[in-house]
Length: 211
Image 1 (cartoon, one colour):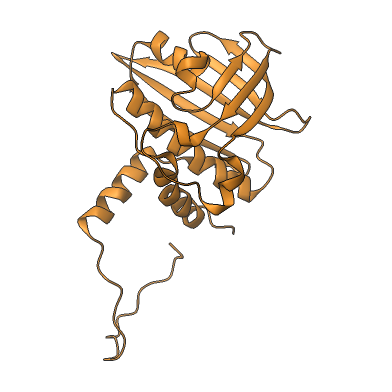
Image 2 (image 1 turned 120 degrees about the horizontal axis):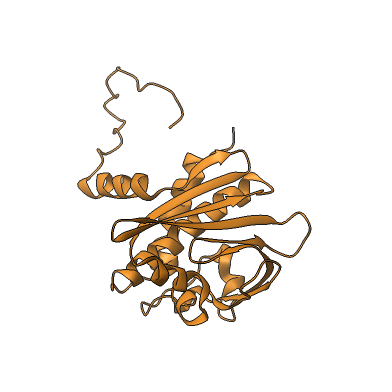
C-alpha cells in the first residue's frame, strides 16, 4: 500500500479498471497476515508459528540432522554455546513435488548451498541461536519455544541484518521454511519449496518496500 486514495472519477471508456480481488486473493492475504514476518527494528524481523507439541518434538526438528533436513537444511549443530553449525541447504529435496529454482536462486541447486556459523545460545528445549555466517558482523537467528497447552509457540527472530535486501530475503525464506515445518509436524506433504516461496518473496518485496 502506498497511502494514496483511489480516485472517485469513473474510468474512461477505453480504460479497464483493475479486476476485483478474488476469494483466492482474500484467502492468500489472510493466510499471509496470520503467518507473516514483522519488522521489529530497521535490521530485524520476527516470525511466529503455533505448532503441535510436545515441546521436545519441536526442539528435535530444530536441532537433529534428520528432522532439520526435512524443513530447513541437513547438517550438524553442536549442542553448546560456541559450537559449530554446518548446514547444507537443498531446497528441492524439501518436497516430493518437482519444480525448478527461480533464476536468482539457481546457484543454490542442484548441489545445494553450504552454511557455516556458530551457536550463540543453547538452552534446550527452549532457546537456540546461531550466527548467520562466520564473519564478525554476521546476522543472528534466534529460535524460542514456549508451551501453549498442547501446542508450542515458535518465535524466530533474525537480527543484525546488513541491508534491506537481506531483510526482505530472510523474511520470505523463513516464512516458506516454517510453512514446511508446520506441514511436517501436522503430517502433511509440503508443496515444492520454490513454488511456495515465489509469492511470499513478491509480497515481502511490496510490504517492506524501501522507504
